[in-house]
Image (tube, rainbow, N blue to C red):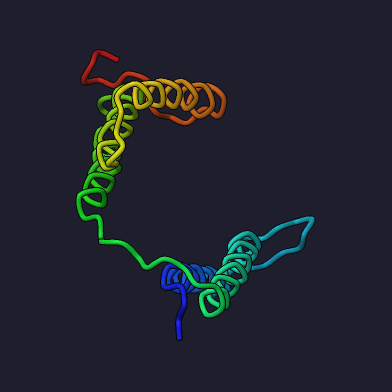
Length: 150
């Protein structure tokens, strides 16, 4: 009956996350378009996710698709580890150390890992985040943390 398991499960996950956002936002005040309350954005985003998920669910019964591939446990573990490591060391090591580590470790999860694009991505992302978040928005994270004399 289901012709595309990938679309089916994608749609189901989108609908579930969208419904969760809308249900959680019910307890907050909505506000209006001019003066948005704390429930406005989660309700709007959740509704969009529900719509996109419903389209994917309907599509899964109509359009044939490819089956879902094998579960990539190595990739999952590397990405979760890299994000957790970033969270644990960013305050003490600094953004200049923690962010490239995040990029390198998570890039190892790919079967198509290459050094040059990974180094370029790490450098560009570190520069961008340093300028936008630390200098521009004033996020209180050290560029170089106390572990490295910052």
